[in-house]
Length: 106
Image (cartoon, rainbow, N blue to C red; front, side, top):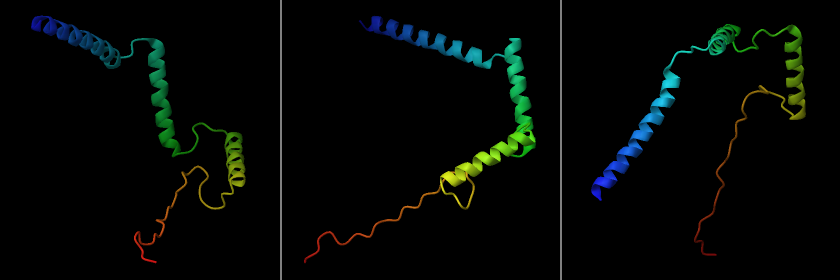
């Protein structure tokens, strides 16, 4: 009985080890497919362009920037945002309610 449980546990651990090795082997391997390599190269290129753009749109034409500005102005008008950045996450302030005593003798 004990031997049977040990064998079953060994099979389960072996299956998990094979599955984990299969997943990590794909992740750790270098991109050998030319399509994957092109994708990785484009990601790296975009990252460097994004960093040099300083937070603005990458390779944006003046027309695209103008359209973005119009859309942000439309959002500000729609949601009545008069000050601050439209793209910033709103800040919430919750004040604690003032509660009276629990056991008041009135």
